[in-house]
Image (cartoon, rainbow, N blue to C red; front, side, top):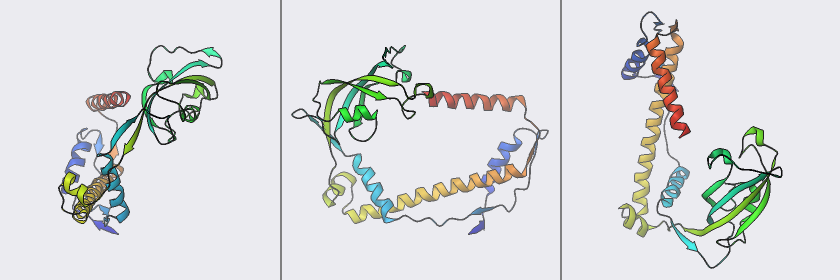
Length: 243
């Protein structure tokens, strides 16, 4: 369903952005009476259940295991270090990403966090054990120029843990969340999820409106100050992502 949306604040923001470039560069297009998609938000029982599962992980504890070997599903801490590639010693300049190795990595056995050959070697290993495996490098883990090469990887198991997810019941919500019953907690949770969806809808609608106004406008270049400001913001964003 389409509905004309009151967009005073959004239009002010959009016009400020667009016309900030200066009248010599931009001719503002039609922006009055723009229609945005009206969405009726709702929250399903499945979404509530998923949110409860996510919440329980905040209260999950981990017990270290020392009396047995590692098994599928265990949380383990490992080092996996590439020592040779295609039979030749491999010595990266440092321990950065281009080493394709992992140091002190926390993973779940069987969840494909590391090279499959490394994952498959872990069950049966005890804390402190080392093992060397051969793996074929794929584009999921390495750069394109490394794909298909054979790597010898030294694997060391540093620790084993099992997770303890608390039981979701009346006692849990009363002691940890401040609600008397699970029904009371779920009703409040549903309202919070609904509010999040409605806020996301508003954001998407403003984006729709902005796209429409921009598409209705004509641009004749940009001034140096605007270009410099955008370049600085772009570079800053890239630096943060790289970190």
